[in-house]
Length: 238
Ligand SMILES: Nc1ncnc2c1ncn2[C@@H]1O[C@H](COP(=O)(O)OP(=O)(O)OP(=O)(O)O)[C@@H](O)[C@H]1O
Ligand SMILES: [Mg+2]
Image 1 (cartoon, rainbow, N blue to C red):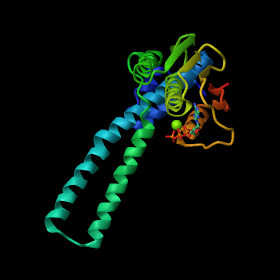
Image 2 (cartoon, rainbow, N blue to C red; image 1 turned 60 degrees about the horizontal axis):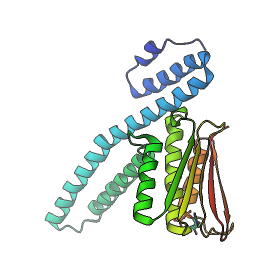
Image 3 (tube, rainbow, N blue to C red; image 1 turned 120 degrees about the vertical axis):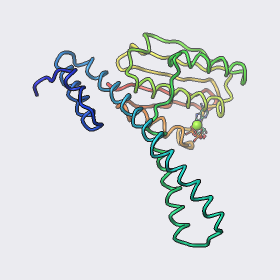
């Protein structure tokens, strides 16, 4: 495919055209630099998802919530037992719930302007202050090496792993190692707590971490020994 000049491709206005423009732009960039193109696509996809989430929130979700509250007032005022009206009301409430779920899926976990590592430092301070758990952070390489989507998955996985350490391990220490510069990148969250059996219960936390890792082409491994502790490994895509 012939390379399309980026400014021309980006001039497209509608959402559909914009998506095509993003792909075309990525294609042209890939011709120059394969690695950079991958990151450009990830970042563009992230921005586009955030834009769709904003549109959904400010448009459909807000209007639907407004219509539902008016409808509720109407039903209360007229004290109606009309089944059809009640069904319509239930459908609208169901739709709003699904829009909100989509919003939660579309919105990346917020990484503050302090960055992933900065946010984790705050969380480490909190763990020490509130729960008496010492969280040691170590990094190799800068987090900016990872595309935004990968950083978000790292943030989500580390947060859930830390929550599990706090809730289940009984450990007073937790080590978070982040090898951003490794290929593939590798994140480890380990504790020295009670551990759990391999055939132990799997909740939404572990399941969600596995799905998020798989979503970026990476994988999650959990090594746990009863009485010795647990380590969660997040490997980036190859
Ligand atoms: N660091 C840990 N130390 C000890 N046990 C753990 C640790 N992490 C997970 N577990 C065990 O694995 C189980 C599953 O964890 P998972 O995060 O999937 O679910 P959960 O924390 O119980 O609930 P939630 O769905 O709210 O996350 C936990 O209930 C716990 O028994
Ligand atoms: Mg959990």
